[in-house]
Length: 75
Image (cartoon, rainbow, N blue to C red; front, side, top):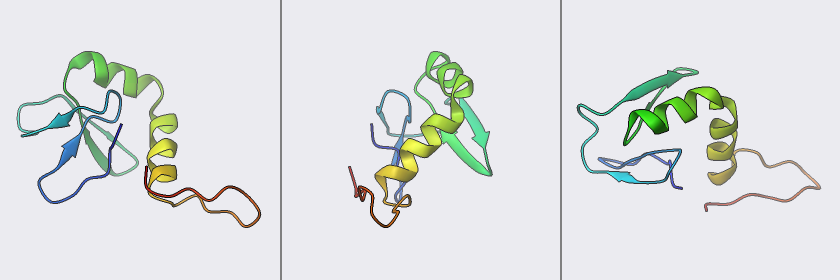
């Protein structure tokens, strides 16, 4: 379920599928960030729970590090 975007790498945040080319794929924007999806089904799932997917992404890249709690690293 990788959603970290690198140079030329795009991942569907719902199913984790790697997208070779995001052109022509369903997209959604949430909190000033564009997300790409493999299908309309994944886009609709994301739109229903966008904040949950965004927080999971932040946790994976280590942005939710709180002293005295579990520290998240790259997943």
